[in-house]
Length: 126
Image (cartoon, rainbow, N blue to C red; front, side):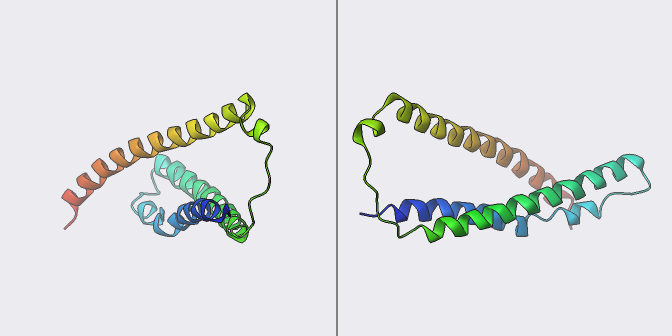
């Protein structure tokens, strides 16, 4: 038995997330800013810094996804069953699932907010 499919799923998720940077370009929004307004200049500069940071994150996600994909065919290693059933192992995995759940909650909230904003924007577009 291999753990490859699980690793591949996680790598695919990372690659999908990294690919989002290509579809989530903030430069179109930046064009709407009136740069003579000092507040608009602050927002513009913030977007530039964030875009740079997101690009760096995406590159790291891409590299990690590639690395994980390379591990796809590793055979399952022997594990100490007592250690796998230990309280520490259970707590660690519980924390991992909690973080996933928190991320899902954040994304769900963000999606609802963004869908409402998109609906408003569609009402303004020709």
